[in-house]
Structures are given as structure tokens and as C-alpha cells.
Length: 383
Ligand SMILES: *Cc1c(COP(=O)(O)O)cnc(C)c1O
Image (cartoon, rainbow, N blue to C red; front, side, top):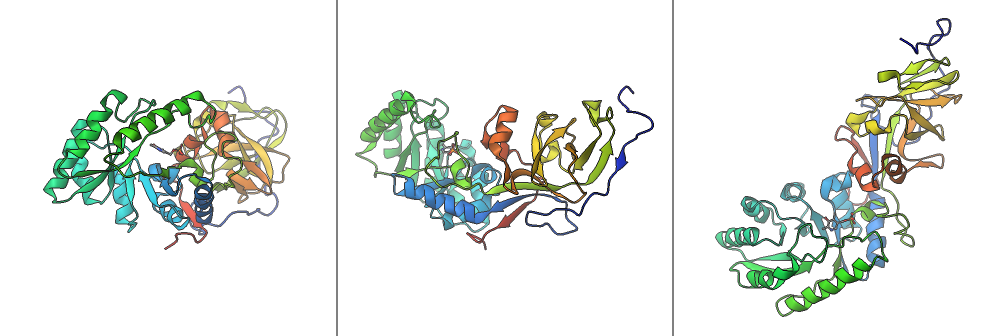
């Protein structure tokens, strides 16, 4: 033990002032770590995006558990805000919407395995098609069920992830046209650099898409729809990208200090003793850790807000707990801690996390663990 601190001044627990509370509460017997999701913010964001979009229809993307906000409540709030369609990545996500009684049109953005074609149809989801194999499987499943179903053909205009490669567009359109039970109801593509509005590749892809649309026009209705995802939840897909659209983050993430102590200079904390108090200071324990999405890479790096002040996370983030250095703040066990969001006008944003972690804000909200209960406020889409 090299960092145990002076023997005469051991760590002591402190009583501190009365706890400070800011966020909607959890029941007193529940775990005091939760994410608060404002359904009204989601609805208002959808309304603002629809207002600004050049296209008349809006498809709200609710994949990945509504970007961590909760699939069904996010979907209902988006529909309450005026979304015409919903989009998911997986058949399983679409089926969960149906099981919850959501009956709006739902597009599955990616082809599932061919064997899942029947399940997709049974859940009344709309398929995206691009490969000959899945198109044939879906056609057979629809014909077997005695149905004729609309499909959306995804053209690859340059992202080169999924979609029909340019050389195969004519074949793919013809394949749907000549199928027994499929109807071309939509044509769509995906920009590779949508977060850089002035990138020349956007115009190149748009030009390619226009070419594909012209190719398909003899068969298809003109579909005009935008497909926002992250912006639905009030976050900017890239810094400054949503300037002019009044977006409001729907999610904030809260916990409460579980233990507050005074440390003497030289005393170190947590696994590996990777942070040593440089002075006498107040260190507090937070009951949230990497199993909740407070990733271990935030060790000695991130910040949270407590008593309206940004304080640093110190030491190694553990599975269920982490620590902050409160310096001389009058911290008390039970104080509300804002992990993401705003307290007394002081914010910690998903973009802050993204910069600490060298990632994007998308990964931050999608990374909040399943163990963290989502608490819903706001009436939009509530049942
Ligand atoms: C996720 C997704 C979207 C939404 O993307 P955002 O960047 O969150 O707006 C739109 N289209 C497709 C195909 C997607 O996979």
C-alpha cells in the first residue's frame, strides 16, 4: 500500500447539508438511478422537424429502443407529434410495437434473414428489400398468405453498406414489378455524409437517387418522406446541424449520491488506486457504474453536475458505482446528481460525453444500460 494516506487523518464520512433534489422522483424503495424521458419533447421535436422538412411526410426512426429512450413510449410520442410512419432496424422491434398496440405503418430498414419474411408480414410491417434472395422469400411468403404487399426498395447511391448496387437497379426494380405478391410502394436511399451538409458527396448521391427514381417512375408512386432519427430525441446529428430547428433533448439521466466522505491529501480511491486526493477534499460515491452505461473509459475523465456545479469523476469507474471529487461543496448523501441533462442551468450533454469518449452523441444515449429504469414525464402519446 503506497497511497493509503497519513495514518492520523483517515477517511471520514460527512453528514453535510440536506439533500438537494431536482428531477422527477423514483419511488422511495426503488433504485435511485434513472433516466427521465420527456414525451412532450419528443412530440415537439417531431412537429418542429415536420414543419421544417421539404417533404410532406415524416418517418420517425425508433430503432435501438428509441435510441435508448424506450421503443414504445418514443413511438407513441412521435406519432402524437405528427409522425406518419415509424422505422425500426429489426423485425423484433416492429413486432414489439405491434404487441404494444401501435398500429401505424412501420418500415423495417434492413432486410432480416429470408426465413423471417413470414414473421415480418405477420406483424404487418413493411419490408425494405434489396437482395434477390430476400425479395424472393418475401414474395413467396406473401403469396403463401394470399396477400399482396407494398415494399420499399433501397437503392445504394454511395454509402455501400446495404441497398441495391447501381449496376443492379434495373434488375431489382423489374424483379419487384414482376413478382407475384409484391408492389413497389417506395424507393429510398441513405446519405453517407448527411452530417456534413456541404459535402459534395450529398449532391452526387442525390443525383444518383434522382436517376434511380426516374428509372422506377413508370412503376412507382412518388414517395416524399424524410426519415429523422436522432433529431426526434432532441439531439443534433452533428454540431450546428439543427441550428434553426427548435430541438429539445428528451432524456436526462439522474442518480443520487450514496455516500459522502472527507479524504485527506494522499488518500487514493477505487480499483487500482488510480486517483489520489491532491488536497483534503470531499469525495462522494454515485450508485451507477459501467453496467449502467457509465462507461469505464470515463475513469478520471467525465464530469457530472451536483449542487449546480460540474464535478469530475475520479478513480476507476466500477460496475455499479463511481466516485466524484466535490472539493469543498457541501455535498450530502441523497443529493440529486445529473449524469446527463441540466441542473440549476448547468448542463452535461451527450455531446460532452461524446467528446470525452471520442465517439458521437448517438452512442451515448444508446449506451444507457437496460438496468436503468426509464421514467416518463409529459403527456404526449401516453396511454
Ligand atoms: C438510423 C437510420 C436513420 C436515422 O438516422 P439519424 O442519423 O439518427 O437521423 C435513417 N435512415 C436509416 C436507413 C437509418 O438506418
